[in-house]
Figure 1 (cartoon, rainbow, N blue to C red):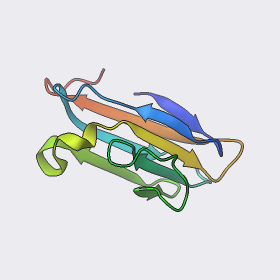
Figure 2 (cartoon, rainbow, N blue to C red):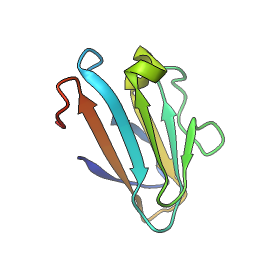
Figure 3 (spheres, rainbow, N blue to C red):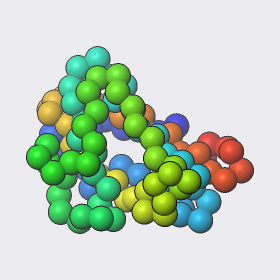
Length: 102
């Protein structure tokens, strides 16, 4: 499971999965302070900001997407930014067809 430090500088690609093998993807704000703004840039390629994000993750919040519910577009790529210059931890949990983490 990748753990990324998301800062106030937009990270243009926190995850982009293999669409044919990716079954679901989860993101969790693993910090006790700071907000993460997450955006699927497959649908809108503009730079992620707090005002155009698809998902806002407060401390401890998580979100997941799956092929069954969200269709093929959920594989990303995803971009992220936070409101904390020192960084906010983002856990990225991809699950592939065989049910194994990569």
